[in-house]
Each structure stands twice: as structure tokens, then as C-alpha cells.
Image (cartoon, rainbow, N blue to C red):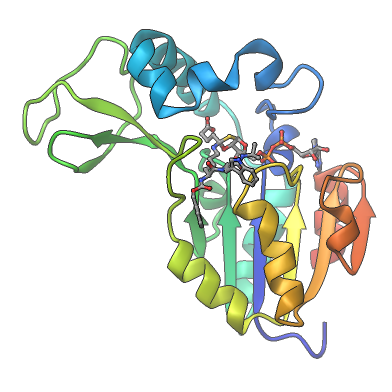
Amino acid sequence: MTDIRNIVILTGAGVSAESGIDTFRDAGGLWEQHKVEDVATPEGFARDPDLVLRFYDMRREAIQTKQPNAAHDALARLDAEWDGELLIVTQNVDDLHERAGAGRVVHMHGTHLQAWCTACDRRLPWTGPMIDRPACPACGARSLRPDVVWFGEMPYGMGRIQAALRQADLFVSIGTSGAVYPAAGFVQDARAMRVRTLELNLEASMGSRWFHESRHGPATRIVPQWVD
Ligand code: BJW
């Protein structure tokens, strides 16, 4: 990576799969067990908030029992040692990048470990359940929802992400199916700006053809191989 100074790394559910966190679209993944329009849209939440809160309570509880794996560790090492610009853009709502020690992380689809009060618009650290409709500690309204980005909502940090992509020499996509936009379009944005692109994924993804190079295998093997 001698001619590389600035790196943007996009991660998806595949990077946390070997920590025991379910992906969405793989066999046995979350979207086989739940209808996406019921649990991951604002309309689904308006229709049946209990169903949605239960879905997120279950995942929030599970995530807290999981540990970072060798892929998170390798990315945290890279973050600590890389002198140039580096941004880990994760679509994941878990905090395994941070628990591995990475600092330069943006959660474009939000985080499980935060509640959003839609009455006073505050974000609050949150580790417990929401199904019992706790009151917002700031304003007292019972209007808390998980601080995650559902279909039809605007992902977080888009300005920072686009700025990092504009400065990047290398864009790396790890463990994501390339099914969900705008993240799925970052590789095309990068190509349009003549940025080098690399995919690290278990298998060919929907976006594989856009990358200069694709390496296939489990993240715990191919991410440390790439970093070290
Ligand atoms: C391994 C592995 C191992 C397994 N090692 N690899 C038509 C065209 C274009 C766009 C649209 C359209 N119609 C609607 C849209 C927009 C829509 C969209 O993209 N829809 C598509 C379905 C077509 N997008 C939105 O609505 C987004 N907002 C938006 O667009 O706002 C407007 C806007 C305009 C302009 C600029 C910017 C914005 C919001 C999307 C929100 C997505 N939310 C979710 C839920 C988050 C909360 C939660 O966790 O519950 O985000 S959905 C879900 O999918 C989650 C994930 O972050 C996201 C991506 O999934 P990911 O990470 O790729 O997981 P999988 O399971 O799909 O793939 C795992 C991969 O890992 C696989 O490839 C495996 O092979 C691999 N793998 N094990 C390495 N061990």
C-alpha cells in the first residue's frame, strides 16, 4: 500500500458474523425470520411498535454478549497505526469496532446502544429494553425508539462520508451484500473519482463487478491478511 494515504473502509453484517451476530440476507439471516417492511421501516413501527421494540430489544441484548473478532481487531490495529486519513464507515448497529479499539468510526445506520426520543429529539445511551415504554429521562415523553436508520430514512454522517470518499486513495468494502443504498453505491462513487477499490467478502456480492479486486473468504481470515 505504498502509494496509499487515505482510506475509507465500509463494513457490513459479514464482519460481525463470526462474532455470532446474525446477518440480514444470508440463509438463516434476520430477513428470513422477520418481514423487513414490518420491523425496519417507520411505517412498520407506526403499525405495530411492540413488534419492532421486541425485535430490537432481543438484538440489543444479544449484541452485548458478543465479542469483537479477528477482523474487528485487525481494523482497530490499522486505525491505530495508519498515519493518513482513515474512516471506518459501518452499516452495523453493534459496537464491535469500538470495543476492538477503533476510534475513527461512523455508524451510518445508527446504533443499538442509543435511544432517540422523537418528542425532544435527544439521543441517549441505552442498553436495556424499550418494550416497557420507559419515559425519556430528558423530557418525560414516552416516545423512545431505537436510534437506527430504517428504510426510507436518511443515513447518518453522509457529509463526512462523501468528504472522506473524495479524499480517498483506497475504498475497501468488507462483509456487505451491496443490496442497500446509499452504501451499495459508494463503490461507484469511488470509481467515478478514480479511487482504487477492493472487496473482502465471503463470496461474490451484488456489487462485486464494480471493484478493481475482490478477495473471497471469512472476514476473520481475509481482513487480517489484508491489514498485516
Ligand atoms: C461474510 C461473512 C463472513 C457473511 N465473512 N463476509 C431502489 C434503488 C435504489 C435505492 C432504493 C430503491 N428503493 C429504495 C431505495 C432506498 C433504500 C434501499 O437501498 N433499498 C434497497 C432494498 C433497494 N435505502 C434506504 O431507504 C436508505 N435511505 C435512503 O436511501 O435515504 C435517501 C438518501 C438519498 C440520497 C442520499 C442518501 C440517502 C436507508 C437504508 C437503511 C437500512 N437499514 C438496515 C436496518 C438497520 C437497523 C438494523 O440493524 O436493524 O440496515 S436494513 C439492513 O441492511 C441493515 C444493514 O446495515 C443493511 C445492509 O446489510 P449488510 O450489512 O450488507 O448485510 P447482508 O446480510 O445483506 O450481507 C452480509 C454479507 O456478508 C453477505 O454478502 C455475505 O456473503 C457476507 N458474509 N458472513 C465475510 N464470515
